[in-house]
Image (cartoon, rainbow, N blue to C red; front, top):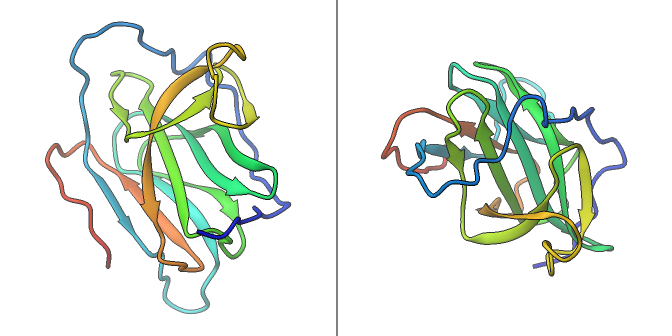
Length: 167
């Protein structure tokens, strides 16, 4: 994997503290299906990493990637129901990106097995080690292998058991 450097243009992020609170319980959470596929639009292609919220609730999203600075995690983007948000604008520089998302209303989470640091409010954190000792929380991010595509889109869905696929 090459070290990718994100675009200088970073979309506006919002704080998540008033919308999505981390649940510190061990109760079973709703796990919704994720679709991932290269974003191919008709007409001229626009390179980016997008997340589309196919649920009926506001979702908070964080992304992780490798850059020249090291491992980076950033958040929070608030993605309203049935809308999309661009997390990285321009041609993708890395092969692998990592995503964590949480449903604001129901507390369901879209997670994976790659641990990265997050904060309660807007953040950009360098490094994935010692999250707790540095004052952050640690969450499991899902890995997306873009295959070095210039664009990628992740679709968040309420449908349990939906398989991930590329189109």
